[in-house]
Amino acid sequence: MELLHKNIATYGHLNDELFWLVTIIIAIWGGLAMLLTIFFSLASWRKEGKKADGTLKGEGFAQTKWILIPVILVTLCDAVIDVKTAKLWAEVKGPVTTAKDFGDPSAKDALHIRVTARQFTWSFDYDLDGNQKFTDDADMNSQGILHVPVGRNIVWHLTSEDVLHSFWIKNLRMKQDALPGRYIRGWFKIGENQVKGADFSAPVNLKEALTSPEDEKAQVAEVAKHLDKRVFEIACAEICGSSEKAPEYKDRINKAGDNPKARREASRKLLNSGHHNMSGYMVIDSKEGFDTWVKSKKQG
Ligand SMILES: [Cu+2]
Image 1 (cartoon, rainbow, N blue to C red):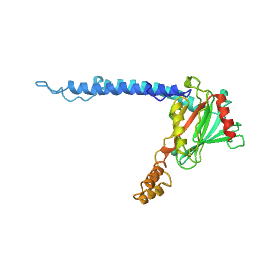
Image 2: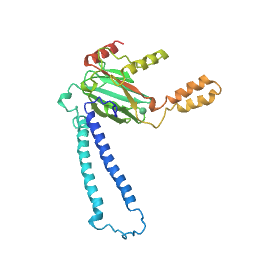
Image 3: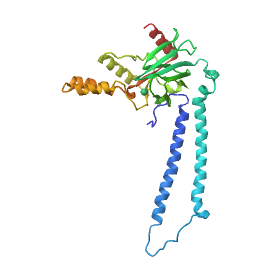
Image 4: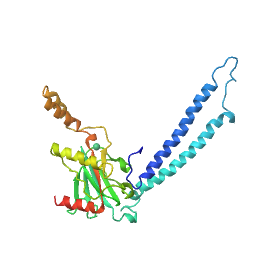
């Protein structure tokens, strides 16, 4: 059984190793402190005929060693965590913060994608001609569904059009707040090893707009078929705030009175007017599959 969500990013293992290292260190020290507290509480239980040794002032090494030795050991553990954290940070943030043009020479063929969050949806602009302008004739947009090719460096430029949002793809071990008026860059690469066993022979057909109950049904079935193999969830991890239309929907619920259909419809609209409803999907394609998807989308 996998305890963590499946990792598909090439740098993801560094994140997971750090997670387990911190968890184990805390478990050992926390468990030890707990056991010693219980042990000493029981060992110094009041006994018939045995008197207390008097008040301990804690000045001698016999007492201070209980503080000094753990402090030194815990600090050493911290140092190991810090070194591993620095390595992870350099891997995840280094390529997009130290060089203007995604410095890693192997990243020349990086695909740049502008990710725009708005109440309440994700919008993806693909820079297909490589000039990082996103809106040229050659470029392309998709709503809610992000297609990425396997084995290629993807650089995302994240922004928000209205409020704070939080771009979260758990399988990429990546979560980043989106701020209005600011572009925050990050990158990832989905390694062939990470999606080993996924079937790339046929395209995954997810629709950007669902206009009928049949559409919704087909979408759910297609997602279920490929989830955690070629399809991965995109969520907004921002929780506060709701649509400016929320008061209107609340008002409609109140006015619906005994009309169950109107009530249900307004309730549903209210429920869907929050960040939690910004779910989207990332579809992994083979390199050729991605080109085919671009072509078919351009042809409409
Ligand atoms: Cu949001």
